[in-house]
Length: 152
Ligand code: FES
Image (cartoon, rainbow, N blue to C red):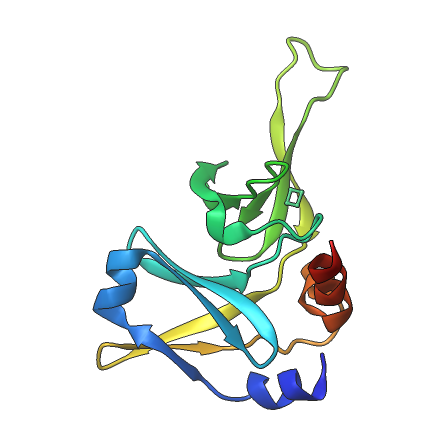
């Protein structure tokens, strides 16, 4: 994390009024140098880095669907599935030794950095996740990446 992000990570940021976010379902905010997507889905709030860990796709344009009983955002670029609660990358695999072939859901582990959403008196706040160690989506939050896409 950059120093801006480290300072930003320690405190909650006001994102909006709860009723407004419930109505719009999604809010995209830049907080402490990160672009974060805050979502309301089936009674819960979620916050996740807005650029997909695979190749920087805009998750704010992705559909939310359940896979293996877990709500996921589906990246609009290559259809990667990312769990809203943990940021895990999910995929389907088939064991060729088991007949009939039956795909099962598997996890690639945590690939997308998720953040914490809290509510207080009708206001919604975001606290950045400053856990140490790189998560794949971190790369797409850097100035280096932003410079690259602006030149394209
Ligand atoms: Fe998201 Fe490829 S950029 S799936």
